[in-house]
Image 1 (cartoon, helix red, strand yellow):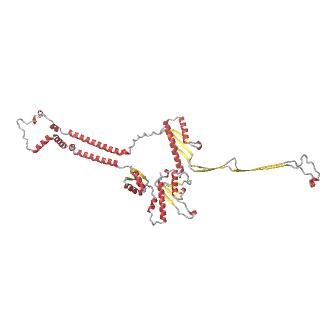
Image 2 (cartoon, one colour; image 1 turned 180 degrees about the vertical axis):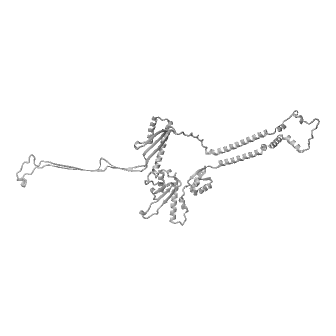
Length: 513
């Protein structure tokens, strides 16, 4: 208090201002340190449902905030599980804007069959949309179904159809994901075929079915998308090879490809050069006979006519042998039918360009070896007209890399470090304020009048000028001893001389200023 009383009015105002600034800074730091950190738990939320979600979280004591214009919900760190279970229990964890089968819970008793059919269709659409929205890249999907009425005549019946709208860009989904969504929707509706499902992205591009009638390409923008993916993958592999060989930043590679994205079905028919017998029938006929002598004196005119010698042949002594073999073979046609489906993605032409920094100082032999290596790695084929070029140019100097940032502070120590920082700030503030006050005190003591110190110091009688002494024989004026104020002052001086001296210094300092 003595130090405070010894300060001037300007010093007191300065001290009060510093104290208020310190309190304001401390309150601000404490508020920032005590503010909860939030983690996003839901995205693609319908803004109309944001208030219901926040109300449900507040009911269980989970602090939340709305982000991205009402399409995202963030909760306090450490309470993500409680928030997820709470929203799931109340059916608010879906990002779809379509209601599910819970719409049937609001059916009135007197609802007509048409109203019930419409409610069932809306519930089925919402349930499918909620399921599709759980696929990565398909959040917020909308599904619309066309369910025809049952018809007694099969010829007049029509099949169900479905339309799926994905709000995001369809390039985030690959062919397998698009085909999976189509089959998922088709399997969820009775009588619905995957070919009757239409999938469109937010830009209006049709993802399913594909232009070729639903091939395995998944309806992606065939040529451009396939070539872009192929180029990026090839560049990544070749660039990694160059960085490991020549060093980072010593070479750059660009790949341009021409792919065949057409799906081709081939059928080949070939015949064998040698037939394969299917059935064979063999038939053999044999006849054997012995000769006999002519009968003498046979009746008739022949025996009465004169005969002639028959040469060397003797009548009736010749033998008769007969054999006939027949073979009937049936050969099958040696026919081979080969059906081949050529998947899209064949490379029609490939062009690779490589730039090497001159500072790498590669010799001609090194360039030749690098050319062979990159040709093999990129799959260059001269028959297709592929081209690989390597040129040496001077690269621009790269800016100096920034220093690596320090390790991130673990979240568990963030609160402790904030408290330590506040304490250090308070100690530093008190240190500088005390230092300033001590400096002002020394300046005050230094500026006090010199005659005050002379009064406090002991002065011998011999040093007193003669002019200050009373003339000889002249008596000093009498001092009134009856004044009570003088007696109180003398008592105070004798009891606490330091306090009296402090007050005198303060009065003199105030008068001087």
